[in-house]
Length: 73
Image (cartoon, rainbow, N blue to C red; front, side, top):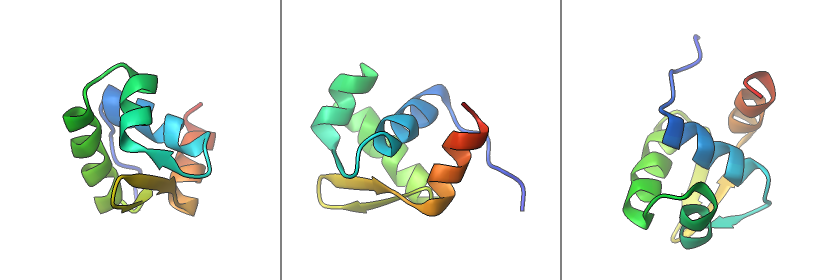
């Protein structure tokens, strides 16, 4: 399975999530420098690729997300 192409925002959000155990959407928005809606959309797309798991406002990186960050850093 090939690695999906991520937008700059998706990649930034994934890297920010990976650096925390669990991240809050609003903290991610501040860290990445975009609005909460953009983060929410990015998290939704990342979850479809199984890179993150979202529960309410909290997001955590999956093993696949960790691996993507390691190979694209």
